[in-house]
Length: 537
Image (cartoon, rainbow, N blue to C red; front, side, top):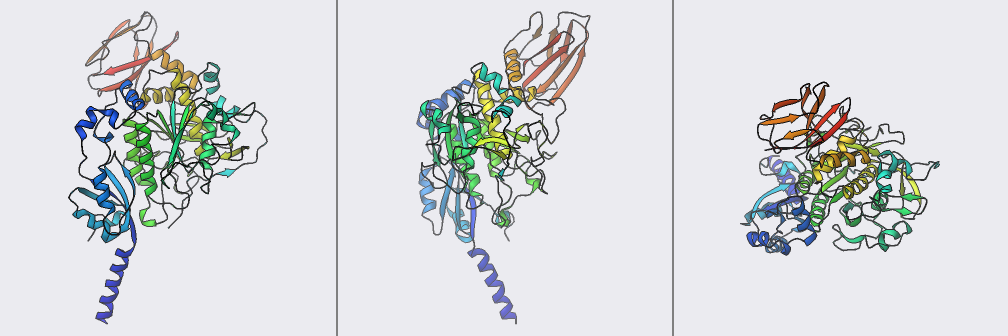
């Protein structure tokens, strides 16, 4: 009996090691780091260098590619398949038997291994399919011109009227594939203008992103930004330029898709992309051992969330759907929308009311989630057959907002990505009373433009604030002492950090306790309001 029991234990251990596992393998160093940074054109395009320079984004070691010799050595190890790589994390994503993956630790350039099944990691070592898209066709008779409501709701029509249609802004769309985009009439305008810049399929490792991959989700998402059918449908940024990246494998749900996403974000950064739209989210996988929990949606746990934060640090404005779990037991905004650096978009209906499926923010997330909302209930989209239909999902409120932001950024070319996010938040319907359902609310992008223009003024008419940048004491001079003026100071995440009522014509304000960084000051009185940027040294 003891022998049989021992044999059973051995067989169970063997079976556990014989199961194919997924893991990230982090590497110790890179080659030619100093010379690559000194000669950035060797690792980045000129567009990427120019974008970083314009917004003071440093070029650093994370921009240097992974050592290909290390990757080759890993590929040559027994039983190992390399699926993806990340220069930002200096890591590769591998699939193999647990013992074969553990054996990689013997390579002197392997720093550490992080299994997707966290119970297998060194510090603890002694399936369920998720539909990320949840597209629901809604039968709606149009009583107005298809996309009119979703465009007017966020004030993009005013930007278009002023000829701000996304021209000069480059958007990378990370999704599941883009069937027929290269032939559809809805994207003829995009192709004729040379604004379809190319793409890559990170799942199948080829450049054909236009094949049908069991899902046309990416085509519908793209239509909300770039689609144009004369007198019938207009996207929110019809004149922006687009890269199309397939990172989602619709045939399975595995953590490797997080690595595909980060690879695509790295490619976008090297190409000088301004905005990423990602209508994707990750919570649970085919292998339940890899599943996340709502508590993991804390803005700093998942691989994709950490990658999205790096993209933000690199100066890319990452726009991501909040998720469609509002009516489920999960409920919480998913990854990478939980990242503090990601602009997360929830959904409302045509009247601006909260859409019950839209995922909600929680107190565990480091910043307000969602950030803002746009129409996602019965949103107008164009399918791969060039038909205008209606779909539900934050998958569509996200690109509606991303395209609107592209048009706004064209109008404010000197603004940084953080500036743009703040202007959009400040323009939203419940900026002063955000909640976990609508975030800061429904933005008015024309108002965001006005806020941005007013912030570009270094001095008000008859109104002075100095020194700026400020270290300790801020001097404020207002034109009259007979009227109370309300001062509010917000950080770049839109959080109120100081409020004061000013009743004198001159005051000295002690700001020494404020952290270094960029803030927005808003002055309001019965005679009007003014907002501008304050830099705390």
